[in-house]
Image 1 (tube, rainbow, N blue to C red):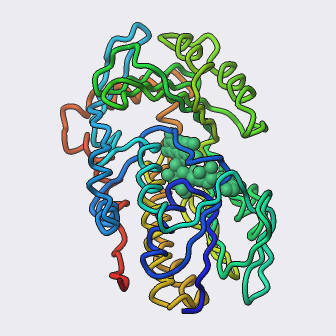
Image 2: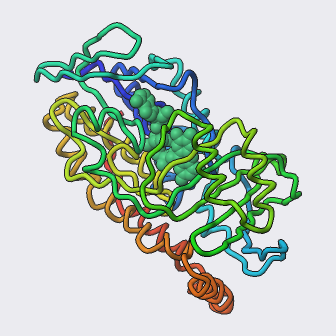
Image 3: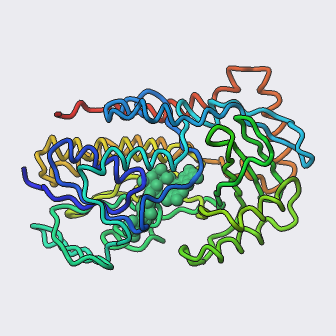
Length: 396
Ligand SMILES: Cc1cc2nc3c(=O)[nH]c(=O)nc-3n(C[C@H](O)[C@H](O)[C@H](O)COP(=O)(O)OP(=O)(O)OC[C@H]3O[C@@H](n4cnc5c(N)ncnc54)[C@H](O)[C@@H]3O)c2cc1C
């Protein structure tokens, strides 16, 4: 086998999923993760359609992921007094299998920890690809050589910046920011989500987690690209607090809870658009290469399918990356484009910039109640996009 030692940057979803398959095919995966331990947190993520479930099944993870299912039912738009106005069906908000991102990250870590070398609290600083191997330097660990380096390090990928160029070239901002954190379920919600929208450009969603003991709060707001320190949580809290100042319903209380939340996650709602996900001995998977944005509901599915395909192509080519990488690109291209399309035009409807659009959206949901076929159309479209790839039966 040609390539053996494969360094993966990022222990989110895509990185451990790739490590799982690489080990199964006889490669030696190492994961470097900049957080000091598994970085959980985040909202619920969805699997949709037979392909996503098939990959989880082939990994032997369908049962643990099923057991972690959020079990959240329909969501409701509410008014400023908390009264339910319009229902959003569960299939639309949660796909076929919805789990908390943090639970999924732990399941993947548990499935790989015995067979993968994990380097926590570190990050790649330079990649020197001399065509025969890759010499990598780290912030803390001593320099090492690998056969291949894979960036699974999310929207702001370090591997992408080092091997492909600055992120401004590839990031497409969709006009929103999104903050997510955990809070107690003081509203006593029962397996549901409540959405409160206040134009222009503010959206608050609270949904239950962990048997109704907790909620995940999602605060989304319209904004041009912002400059801030992604490691400075206090600065991020200040940005969110400013953006939601004066908003009604439970927002003031939720902002208070954000001040002590242990897991605030703030990022732009953006896509990554690239013509190629491989260069020399470097490759990208998941959000690092083709983030479809949280508006698409496809990010996690693309990450696990991308990991399956990249590892499978490397195995089929017996580690010859010059054969495997073009095949990975060809197998994933139209699938990724279909997943990214699911985010088209969603931002303006989800977080309306005028009262007129907000009323239009609510009216549509109300009318669609009477036409179940149309009401379920967004969920069916998402399921179709998530299933638009034939998984090759790789060896092993
Ligand atoms: C804390 C967190 C919360 C999230 N919450 C949500 C959410 O609520 N809703 C949603 O739709 N999506 C969320 N996402 C993104 C979502 O997980 C991804 O869209 C999707 O699951 C694809 O996974 P991924 O593995 O490609 O990327 P990610 O899940 O983003 O994982 C990337 C991993 O790389 C690590 N990393 C980043 N930079 C470096 C570096 N320089 N060196 C080493 N490691 C690095 C990160 O710490 C992270 O563990 C969240 C991501 C994170 C990290």
